[in-house]
Image (cartoon, rainbow, N blue to C red; front, side, top):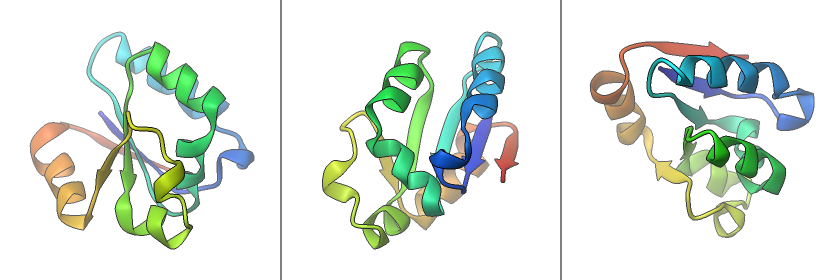
Length: 100
């Protein structure tokens, strides 16, 4: 499952992480961060929680760049462009949830 996040992590990511962790027990889960959700990719606690539970993290390169975050994003995060986003949707994940 690919979860697409677009809101700031300061609006509360706890519920989405709980859902993602439950689903990760049954299938591979990736989280694509777009728009203001890209900020989460710079937060140590968020990165620790997701890495510990083997969630794959993606960031939309254009949105990270627009917010001046590229140099602050953890090396474990996979940056994708719009074409990479389409590949995630079409080739890697069977289901998609947009969390707004």
